[in-house]
Image 1 (tube, helix red, strand yellow):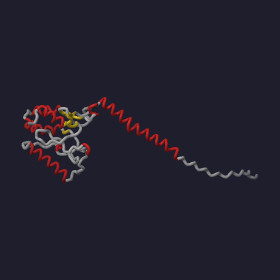
Image 2 (tube, helix red, strand yellow; image 1 turned 30 degrees about the vertical axis):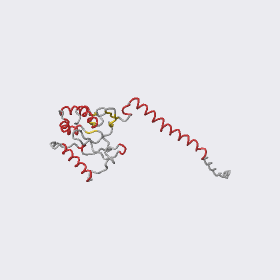
Image 3 (cartoon, one colour; image 1 turned 90 degrees about the vertical axis):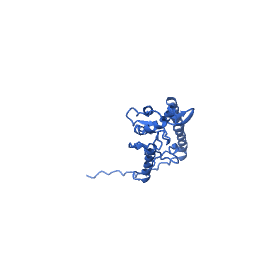
Image 4 (cartoon, helix red, strand yellow; image 1 turned 90 degrees about the horizontal axis):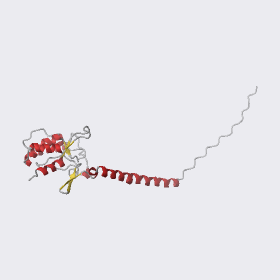
Length: 215
């Protein structure tokens, strides 16, 4: 029996290449999306969030500024340098060209084996000992080190306690009164679990000035 003859298949036609997109047709939508997103994310969203913040948290949205006698003297969020024995001293700061420069927040980037880091800690210990020669207690570590931002406004309650006798003596007020001021200016951790208690140095020193100004 003869095999059935198969009909010949038509030759495959080569696929036609897809037409190239018209670049001019994409330009206008691209610009429109860019402008719309810029307005929404650059103006509308920040404006709405800032308005809500000022309405709900006006003090924090304004920079948490601290005033005295009608003048702004600082912020709760940025430390200040103190060296007078009658004031509590804060942490060291590695910002340039001056300590606690909010426009140049930075750490020292010095490693633990760097001699400059050791020298800075040693110099701070010597300054603390010179301000209170009779204090032989160990110096809390936060008094001889800088924070990563260089702007930390807080010290630990232990660091405040280390300096309390010196400040009380310089101010001529009872030590217990100084301890009460420390407690009143200690920020507690958020929800009592996030972070550690911290004493705001600027607020504490301003409270001291209100009770017993340095003569």
